[in-house]
Length: 536
View 1 (tube, rainbow, N blue to C red):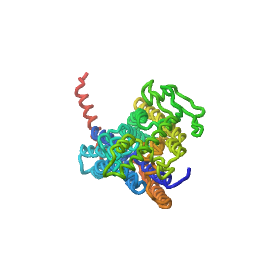
View 2 (view 1 turned 135 degrees about the vertical axis):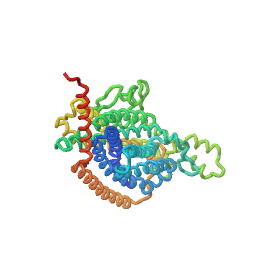
View 3 (view 1 turned 30 degrees about the vertical axis):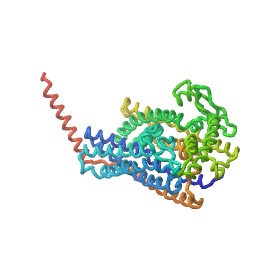
View 4 (view 1 turned 90 degrees about the vertical axis):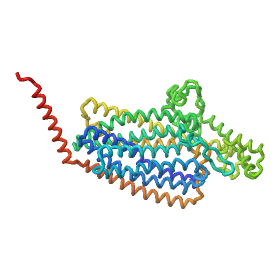
């Protein structure tokens, strides 16, 4: 495939988005874990929990700052590299982004300041409320972004206006409660909780291996293992919900992930492993689990899941229908002041397939001039490259089950073995720190690469969305982003490692005061027991 402005623009956006998402999951998870730790501190008044809250809160703050900086850049790219996309669907896509900025981001950013600078100025309960508002703001921020992305995967609550040549919102609540958006939200935030849990687990294990901050590390592992185990189970269960929603909204993506070339008799098997061959349209050396794909994808034993070949044939049918819609659209716009009712009715009958006609613009300026070969080529182009999706999905799922096993083991040791952890397990926890980031990036790769060749599935092809920029302009900005983000990444890692090596700050006076109060309480109980015990 020739590398042009479309591919270069996609590479730039993928680079910035995937770099930004290095910070998002840790922010989501650490905000909740820090709030949980402070809740325990307020309930018990034990200084160790305040110490834990401040330490993990510091690492959250560093990560939060980098996430904000990289996220702002990403939003500007919609107007810079994807101007026609912004024009075509801005009425729908812009709404959740605006709400995210006005509501979630300001809520989160405002209370982050109070969290860090309000320890000595707010009461314990007031500071705890601030901690939870930071956590809620972080998750609200993810909600609105994923509503916007979910609409790109499943464009509901909107329709095309032939007079403005734009998509316009018809039902905000349908966009808000889009099944794909809701499934993506709960799955993504759960993945963030696992990321933070593995991070806390690994750093705490590193402290135990060096016999440093033992009390803080053991309690941190206990919290992270319990929270991480529940979150890891949630990721798997909610990932199943994402697969189920794809059965209705993104059949081609689902078929490509499973390398399912032919439509199987229901219930379809699941390809555990195999080697997809896109040219031959078959999967070599496949090991199948009978019925599994039918149960996962349809939750029934009687519903078929269409294969890639049948979906290509359906795409060809929709391209031909879209050509009728395109021809009618030209007539409607030419005679907009006196529209022929028959032509308007013809456009309405085929308007749902207009986006498929736009696929032909990759091959010809006017879709009505497309040849039979170009129509078939456009239909074949609706199939994303299968093998990267196939293996990315399976590596992600394998890591997910690994998180369940790891968190389950540490939860067992923390709950029933007196927080006594073998050294090999601690080493594993340290080495496992990068794993949830790998799983998260693979998940986004599957979600976004599997949507190709669409920017908005079934509505706007990626080839039409890009701005009229030169290769040099995009290449220069891409190089600038890579250099700038590399510097930011070095700063981020330097700060995180610095504070991890330094360890938590311990308020000696508060700890001694608590120990004295604790000893006084124990002495009081012993005196009370002595008085209550009758003399022999």
